[in-house]
Length: 137
Ligand SMILES: CC(C)(COP(=O)(O)OP(=O)(O)OC[C@H]1O[C@@H](n2cnc3c(N)ncnc32)[C@H](O)[C@@H]1OP(=O)(O)O)[C@@H](O)C(=O)NCCC(=O)NCCS
Image (cartoon, rainbow, N blue to C red; front, side):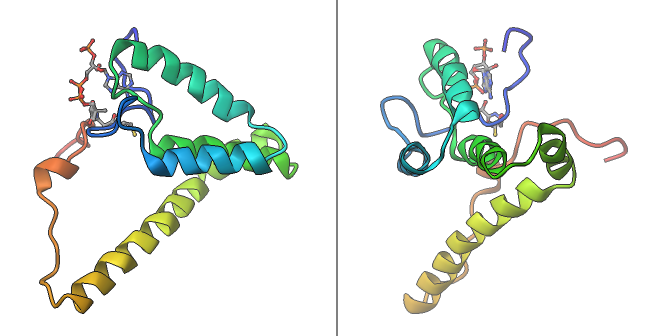
């Protein structure tokens, strides 16, 4: 943050401390009630405490929450830090992310069919991420 590098999993365009993300609230609540330990979630919430003191929309977002809770989950079932790092490198956590989003896509698809609407196209400006372009593009 001090070096102006965005912290992954922090920040949302709409959600903020005043307008919390219900999905994040539900995930945190579930983990608090069911996980034996939530060390990484607690750490991420400490980070959020610092970032939201700067700007109220620099919250722990839903993807960040899923990411840290997956680590807490794998630790709880006995995976070592090295094994978890290997899974992250192999993209296993992204697979969980895709799985979660797929349920949303199915919902949109069914709504469009039910309401006889054309396929929804989200405005491109709203989905562009602030990342470095690969060389040659
Ligand atoms: C997160 C985001 C939606 C916030 O949008 P915004 O309210 O318009 O705020 P800005 O982008 O102008 O950033 C405001 C300040 O917060 C900081 N900031 C933004 N995202 C941050 C993050 N993830 N971690 C730490 N600081 C962050 C910016 O550096 C900026 O600091 P400055 O005022 O000292 O220059 C936007 O920064 C964004 O889309 N970032 C790229 C994607 C991203 O990083 N998403 C979150 C990670 S999954």
